[in-house]
Amino acid sequence: MESLEDRIASAVLSAYADLPNKCKPLERSNATEWVPLSGVVLECGEGELTSVALGTGMKCLPKDKIPLAGGMVLHDSHAEVLAIRGLNCFLLEECKALSTDKLFVSKFIRRRNQQEISQQSPQPFALRESVLIHFYSSEAPCGDASMELTMAAQDDPAPWPTISLTLTSTTTPLTSAPPTGIRQGRQYFSELGVVRTKPGRTDCHPTFSKSCSDKLSIRQVTSALLSPTTFIISPENLYISTMVLPATSYSPIACARAFSAAGRMAPLVGRKFEGGYKFSPFVVRTTNLAFRFSKRTAGAGAIGSNISAVKRFTSGIKGASMLCKMLIWRLAQKVAEVESVEGVGGEKYGLVKLGEKMAARNKAKEVTRSVLGGWVRNGGDDFGRVQE
Image (tube, rainbow, N blue to C red):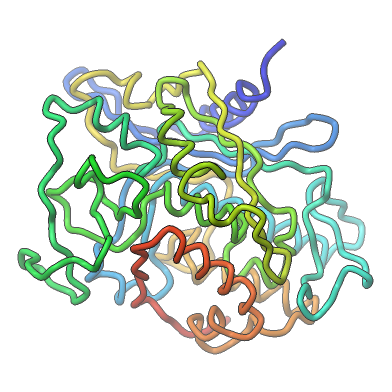
């Protein structure tokens, strides 16, 4: 009988295989390309698995370009981040259908009853209790969960020299001292359990986008929901239950250190916060199923692909990424308007994220960041409300 982890991987791999070739890396005789793939699979009570979001990619927006994004360009296009954002789009679309179509029934989202709604938990919708969230990645998440694998793959395992970071925009070599505790990519292999930034390569312009290991660690407390989605859906049971990695991309020591209650997240064990937030660690399982365009399958000499692909969503703003802050905020606003949800329709995105309705989430996030240490906010991309 096929294992749950193999079924999860198969669901994502099958969904990716259905994408058109233009969404996939090039296969040439002189240069094979590879790309990371991540996906989210929802499991219903009957054991039915549905792939609802996937993404491929490994790019980040340089720090000095973020103020130009205007909410319409993704800061981080790593596969794991795209998959989480895709999940949020899927869930908001389900809520929108429930709000506008009285005959629509969702297998995943339900309307909350009045007894469940309170000032601390005002969201009109919730994930059905029988639904489990599974996460698949074809590569170990960059950052702490992949450090042992990165070390093992080096011809010379000596730590890379420190590349200093600066908080100001610049196009010249960076010379000022880095913020305390922050490490870019693969710097200093000997330092484990620390927050790291993207990209991993030292010949790329640095960013303050945290590694996927760090971002997934945070989501064990803040849930899989983005800020705008938490106005609409309760985070109470919206936590990833299982992460599936290829056996060849799995380091038990690294994953335990990065994610588990026995690793760097230990101070959060048993912690609960207002609004339904809590420390809810996922279980890491492995699969022997291979992704066709993984780095290992592509083989020696393969180069990273520039292609980012996302499943199922379309954009209503010309030039905007389909998973950008602007469009997700707009989708949440549409549902909020129908459901009379207050707080999501502010004039400035940054003010909405810092508003009273976000206080519980922000508290849970800040406590988690303090446990991880060395967390410097990206910032610099505030924008106004979308005008129809």
